[in-house]
Image (tube, rainbow, N blue to C red):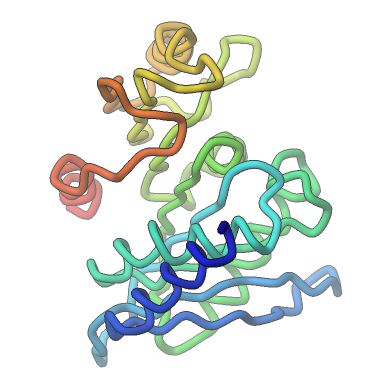
Length: 225
């Protein structure tokens, strides 16, 4: 049943006219990273802004592919070149080593003529959202913002490097993992650090939810200006 649903998603994506490809990209440290790349829906002579999007759970190939289709496709429709990396060790992109691989991936992708230089948008689902926050804390000046849909944060971690940094956070009100119960803690941790936070609970929404593009588009418009 799950395979059939994935096939339906993939077919609907392909027939929408967007381009999804899986690549293996060699990084500066000599390792090779599997990446799903979604090209912008419309071709342009102007290089596309880069979005690094990280899937939930372990960030394996199956999850990353599905994330490329149902969420990456929405960003591609809005002109982003979307890269969804596959975790090399089934640990999402948490921790210093895996954080560093995303930074190296960005360096390699921005060598391409169709990818814009400058700041990169980070986004992630669940574990991927927390990976995005970790990566942003390392070098916030390199990123235009984080869309964490969802993610958690805690005051145990030093969030002060993200002072003034834009973060879009959404958590489902009916989150099966109980994350809605930690919404207040997460908001407090980020707000106390001075994060430029756009956060909300989505009524009756589960852990993984349908994106409210009207709300996200408004936030994306602000960080692009």
